[in-house]
Image 1 (spheres, rainbow, N blue to C red):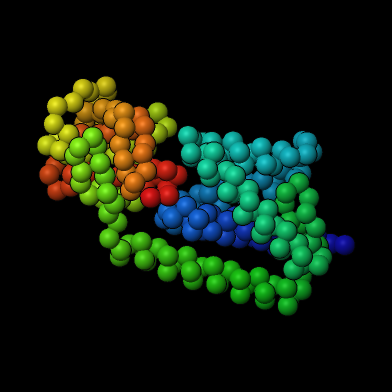
Image 2: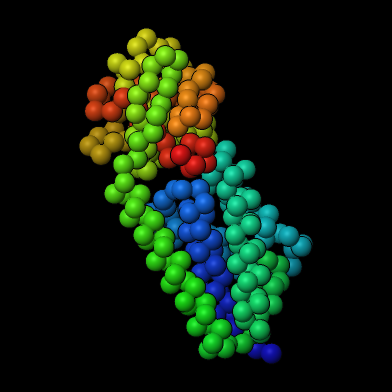
Amino acid sequence: MEVYLEVTYLINALMILLTFELLCYLLNIQMSQKELLKYVLTYNLSVLFLYIDFFDGFLLLYDLLLSVFYFKKLTYIYYPLYLFIYISLLSFLSWILPSAVIFQSVLIVEGIHFISLLIIGILCLLIFYFYISFCQHKIHSDEYVDVKIENHQCLGFIDNGNKVFYKGYPVIFMSKEFLGEYQKIDRILIETANQKEWIDLIMIDDIEINHQLLHHVYVGVMSSHEYDCILNSQLLGGLL
């Protein structure tokens, strides 16, 4: 039976795209189009490894290494969820497409059936629609949560654009006035909308965010007074 390599590649790319969109639902995070495209292209390179006979499970190991590269300390959250969603979609599509088989964690398509592709198309449109609605809701909703350090309390703004990490851990930012005296452990260079600047970095032993107690959190000291606290959306694996 003829193997449709182009269809195989496109369907697996679509599966990876749907996997990351569903991952955003579960972790309550938003990924940009650029990030989604990057993940789809690099994770879907695994299809090319079908021509190289390594060992069973090699593609899952490849995905794990990519996850460590992209998500670092949060791999323990992202990778199991990625596997769960991806394998669920893989099993569902292998059932929908009667001429498809699963080989090395990749769906190999050996035939094209209009009804099956129509069902897959409707499923994709539904997920795309809800993902776009989800992103619009996050953009227009007030992203504020309670933040408490010792006896000081404020509202923290969840900034989806905050992608600052230090040693693989997400960094939050706090106003110098809110922190008071502090002990600097390092200086880091950050890029804001207007300029690049060096800021002091400190570590807070205990901080309560959205009623969740976190330990040893890296904090950048802001000179701006617009917000008391700017949170990183990747805290708690994006579960804020």
